[in-house]
Image (cartoon, rainbow, N blue to C red; front, side, top):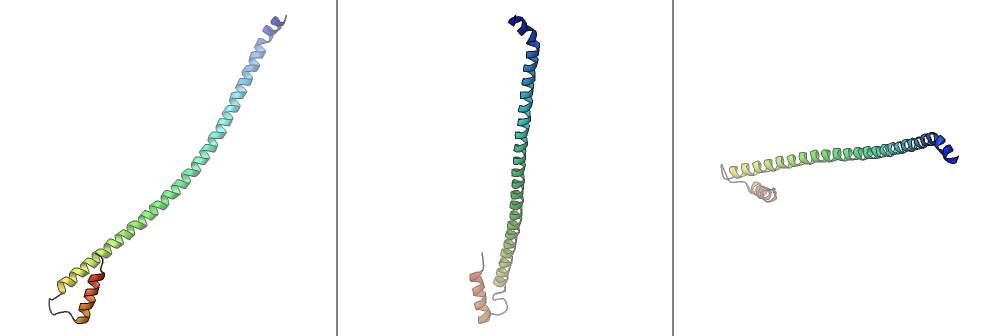
Length: 112
């Protein structure tokens, strides 16, 4: 009798088992979606921070390039001034003592 009762209830038991398995799988999918959403939010936060750092680095690079360009321009101007002084020296008349000392000081202090 127990075997007959068990066989008679087998479709209901299998249906219940399938329902439990389906419910468990659905809950697992919901939990996985929640974890993935949390990972996505964390990754987006890190991406925003990295993008901000990249923008700061780009701004610093632009400033540094501008500084290097100004330094190169200044070095070129010094070179032109020194060349002008060297070409002018002894051309028409000797330099006055004051101008000679000034030129010597400039040549000693100039970069390059």
